[in-house]
Length: 349
Image (cartoon, rainbow, N blue to C red; front, side, top):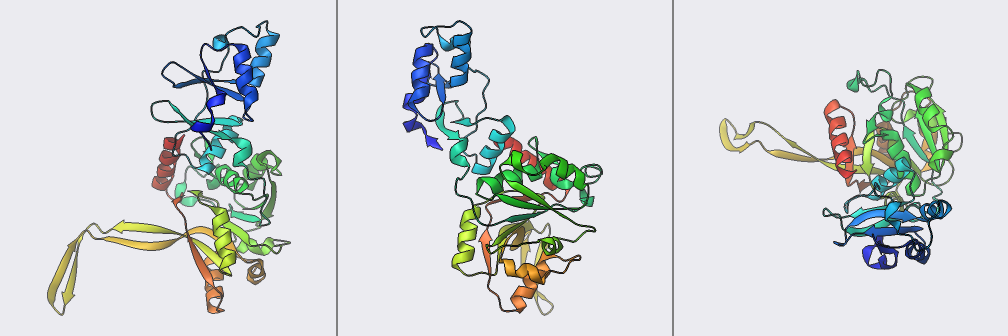
C-alpha cells in the first residue's frame, strides 16, 4: 500500500480544473487523481480516461472536474489484507483502490501492479476441489462446495487470487464432483493471471490421492490446499521456512479452542479433588494447507488416499515435518462455518 503521506501530489479539491487534475494524474504512476472535500474526506476519483472523455465531450482545460469525476467508487478499510484487496480489485476490474478510515479520510492507496508480485515462484499449487460437500446440502446439490459464494465470489476464486498474488503461476485443480462447473469458470486460468491444469479424478480420491495424477511434480516444493478454505496467510514465508529447515512436509496449523459446556470433575480415588466450570481446551489443528517435497508424490497410490496418511508415512520414515501458523482461517465444512466465513468476508468488503 502507498501511504497517505506520499499521496499529496495526487490529491485535488472538488473545485479543481481539468488541467489541475491532469497534473495530479501525471505526477504519479497511479494514473488517478484523488478528489477531497473541504473536510479532507475522499469524495471521488478522476482517471486519465475520465479526463480524455471530458475533453472529447467539449470540456476545456479550465473546466471544473465537478461535473464528471467518479463519486461512486470502491474502497477498503485499513484492516483489509492483501488477498481480500486483490479479490475486490479483480471482482471490480480496477487497478487502484483507496484505503479509508471509518470517517472517510484517505489513509492510503493500493495499486494492482504492486500487489501482484512480479517474481513468480517455481512452486506449483494443487487445490483439492473434488468433494461432494454433503454436509452443506442442499446448497451443494447443484454447485460444488468450492464454488459457493463468499462476499459475492466463489471460495475457490478467492483461493486462486491469493495464490496468484503470492507468485504462484501454475495451479492444478483436482476435480470430480460437478467438475464441469469449475472448469467452465476457470478455463485455462489466463483470466486469473495463471495457468490452470485439471487433475480429473475418475472416482473420489480423498485429500491426497490426486497427487498421484501429477504428470510432472517438478523440483520445487508443492503447495497443497483444500478447496473449501477462506483463509489468508503468508505463503512466501511458509515456503521459506520449509526450505530453510529442510522439511519434507510443512503443515499449516491453527489454534482451535473449545469450551466444554459442563462442569468437569477431577478425582483422586473416589474423592473429588477439583472442579472446573466450563473449561476451555486449546488444541493445534491441521488447517488443510501443506508444503510438500515433490519426491513424496511418488509414494501416493492412484486411489483414495487421505493426505494425513502421507504425513504419517513421512513421520515413520524419519522425515522432518514442520508447522506454520495460519493467522486467518475458516474451514467451510458445515452450514454454520459457511455463515461465519460469509460474515467475516462481508465485514471486510
